[in-house]
Length: 128
Image 1 (tube, one colour):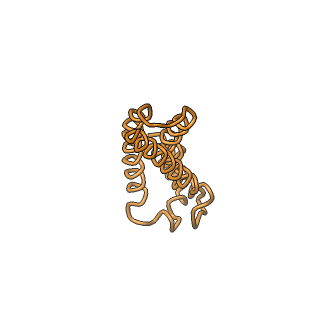
Image 2: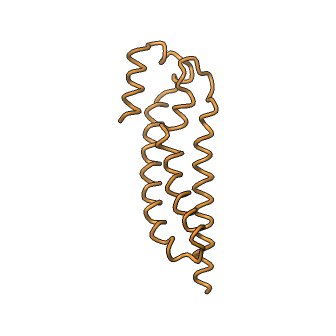
């Protein structure tokens, strides 16, 4: 809601904000918000499900902590950091994304690392 409100205030307070070619693609803002919302929900469910299995994994306490933090914080990097894709084009003069777009990649790597370590720990736990 806060992101939608902030974009609405930009559109109302600065009409030139919407005139940027980057924002002219049909439905890009609506589609972006919808995708970010769905991604947040999926990551939340995935975090809750994986947290249930962390204690069953054959991992050291340090690795379990790494898994817990990397999976749950991937949500923050990808969604709650004000949607990196929108942050990267916040400037009215933006013609392409800036460096903040890389926050999405940090979240993806964090999620992949946590899931990989958890998977290895669960496979090792079933063998032993």
